[in-house]
Image (cartoon, rainbow, N blue to C red):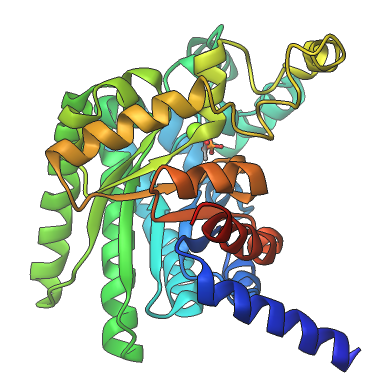
Length: 361
Ligand code: PEP
Ligand code: MG
């Protein structure tokens, strides 16, 4: 066994010597972050924050926040969540040390956090001491016909800026604590999801910077952090020069970008994809292997336009394709700086990045 581990380490060492792409991981807990670091991850490319809101002792405050009728009530509920978020980020920063950590602000439609069965709604009404009829109406109002094309991602922050404000407060204060208490040079990167228009990013970037400034001034500590965006809507790719004015990095969210480019749902495509593969319309599921001629073309356009505005823009991918060898080869060829994948795929990605570097010499 020791010999096997030795051979594995040797192959990984050779891979690291030739690859140009950096390998990051998608992780949202300290445990996953530690696992990924053991496998050689050089940073976090995507820390999703939605699961953090589902944890048992927080969900009631999350629900209070969602059904609040006034900004004041929403802020009250968000203030209850702030210490939990800070704790989440402290754990992740400590696990990652001085490696970059890209934290994506809240993305999913809010109704996902609410109960939908009658008995669960009744229980929540009791917990919140609220009229059940009003609660039912509120939940009904939040329902959308196409939630994945609805009120999610940055659209939440345009409507309710206080949600992202709380998250940014938690990120910056967690980073300052880890720097001051542990002496670790933390590198937070704040990522905005589902941007389709440069104005959305401009508004939210200003909110992020103002909030960060306030926290840093209160703590009398300055901190280097980056603000960037996901590119996961075709319009964002096609207007990437305007978007790059407000973004220090782009991370290609190829799950949503594939969904929106093909116009079929990432959650329902299973109903016909096999038939499509049998009829050789697709060789492989485009959600698993990057569609280079369509989705990839949009990525290439975005890379080119992004660089015309900001030649040092940092470029990565954090959709599922970031762990797929053929897609990694494509990412190498078009000049991305890193790929990000689940912790257990990190060794495969290191190897695939090396093969891409050799193949495309
Ligand atoms: C993506 O859309 O590719 C992505 C990484 O974000 P999520 O899967 O969380 O929508
Ligand atoms: Mg997405």
